[in-house]
Image 1 (cartoon, rainbow, N blue to C red):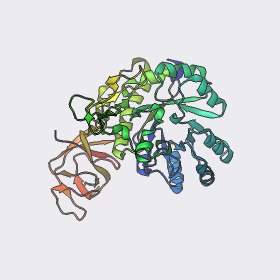
Image 2 (cartoon, rainbow, N blue to C red):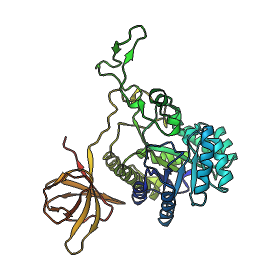
Image 3 (cartoon, rainbow, N blue to C red):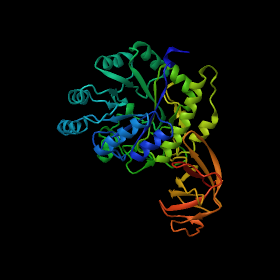
Image 4 (cartoon, rainbow, N blue to C red):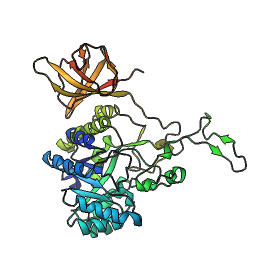
Length: 414
């Protein structure tokens, strides 16, 4: 076995709020990353208040998981004093590490929270081993690779770094069209700054071409005349390449998506957890099971790419026709407790479903199974034919009652 695979691989999941944080760990994440209400590059995510961060860290540590807080904006002068005050309020919370891109913020954290572990955010654009070594010499414990690095470059970085420096890399989720997320489009077009956490994702919008001397004449970039999503990358997916990542020296496999749904987090984490565990159980004879990819695709997604890991992306890694997601399944319910007397399971509805529907049920470390809905009641015990109301509380009879926290999903009609 390559020396770089000698330790356990960390599966790192996004946590946009408390529900997603707990879901990620229950479905197999070793660690989560989250933002506070300020100073995070996902201002549109739910994010956690200071009280919630304290609660989250207690819960994570009680469940054998870690939590990393993102403070990865590029600060302006006006951010410094508010950040100093904020750090003073969270300094006693046992946060496992801070994800930082700005050297000034790094200095401030070290000043106010001595001994804090620092992870270098992908926003810092680390693309070579010399830069990684510079940050390691300044006390950074983990380097989050720029998405533009190949596996060969990561392997070289790993060989040049001290053994105690970890490498983290994105393995799944949205790819930014701009270099390491350094995008000015959002700020220019909407006044919302991507590097301050407020990106409006104009790279997903539809564009046509206008020639300077002919204003008002729109020329289609693609022959279908509908305009073109010329900046629209496919989503990254490396679930079938876990051995390559491990052998290159990547310790932490990171899933993008703090603004994604709880269902997305559960589905993607569960699939990667299964694939990683199978790999670690027998690295010499490991063979990827395509069923894990099929499970992964039950969450909304764009077409997939391996990004920059094997070569510079080509037109095959762009989707010029649409920025729409593939959504073949809908998240219809979340299982709560099962009454041992009646045998009915309480379910919190998330999307409409009805008597006669075939539902897939899946949970942590549990392959999905199918159930046909034959008996359903509202909260008062009245029999009902369908559940159309958001977060409606239901009582359902299952042949195999799901455990609390299991997810119900339904395949959409094609």
